[in-house]
Length: 372
Image: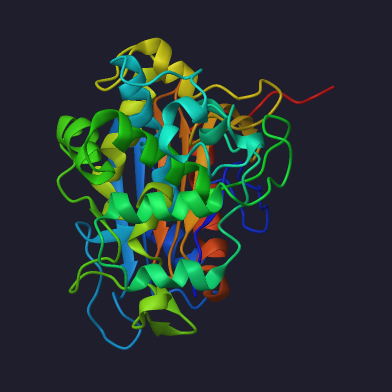
């Protein structure tokens, strides 16, 4: 059984040389990153001056075939979609449908009697910054697995899931410490559904994907004929090689690199006062640490530097165990890099994607000032 894995603050790995001339030879970067791994294919997109600069792909869609990946292929980005969920929630706040400060008891009144008292005052900010005290996932894995065969509408499934989750004790008092939680994002999706009267997936299409022209986005498994995720050296084939569809809001997404870049560019343009989706102050809310001394925005990791490069940095990594994706953006410079691999950590997806990312960072941001 696969579970979503997310990383907010990227751990900077320095096992690959990181300096290359600009423009960067992305094909060579991918070849070097894949070489010591079992990753069948990778893709990489670089953003410069607020626009797509270069896209490169390398490898095969499936390890049991010879069909090469192409620049327009669809990839699974896992928990990197959390920033999109946070942006949807923020758009509902902008429109007055939701409030950052409302309590969970106010936002989901039908579940008040079932949720533990500790959760009743949790806010959207706490849910989306992983400070709600919630566990990573519901502890009963058999309960999670039951959703593979569940045929109820997804909003009903999500309510069933979060009702169980809110009965479990917190891993820490809400508001006190960072605890990465997929459940917090599923709760946020259910809150959006309750407030807006539409399914989360429909809200995403209407309020985010359509305005940004993101036409390739889908939920769940990547369609046939596109790159396949891989586990144990083989293309995924079993239901539990990926996650139940209720996990969409926490990171069960697929799309082209170009469509992912449209979202990332809007996030950077928003940081500079020119975004299409949110008010300037609302982009700042998403991209500001909560609390101020933590590297956690809403759906983003927020860092001052990365791999010795100047920030501000927005970053995230995601995987469902059979894919790996990582993004690093420099909003002030309007530059960034997106990297995807069709294999998870066990086959070297994380190692390869992180190495490829680090290789291009010197061409995207100046060196950070040395600390005294």
